[in-house]
Length: 116
Image 1 (spheres, rainbow, N blue to C red):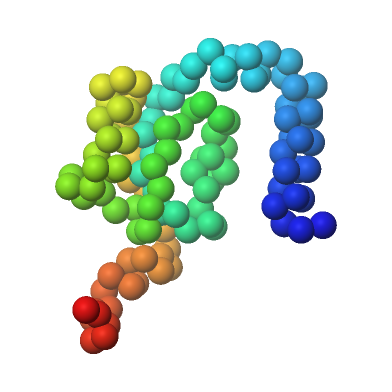
Image 2 (cartoon, rainbow, N blue to C red):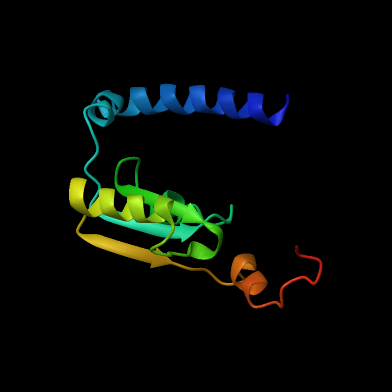
């Protein structure tokens, strides 16, 4: 089975198991979100926010990018922060880095000489 198909099959199984274990789970999520934390983390596939914090869907509002950077002139990052603070009224903003971050390592290298 190819990877995207196996992921869809796994999602169906997860949804079924979650519904059986917690019948109102999806109805509650559909009514809206109320996360108390904005998580700004690295896009590295080894550090998924919900997994490493044992949080369930709806508990974190997550923004991920290379090296968990935040630049105010980045409209995407700024809009996430503004929405989290003004609309969701989160209590905490966590910027989480990790050991061995390739994005941080790359940012410390000299720029390639073949850039236009």
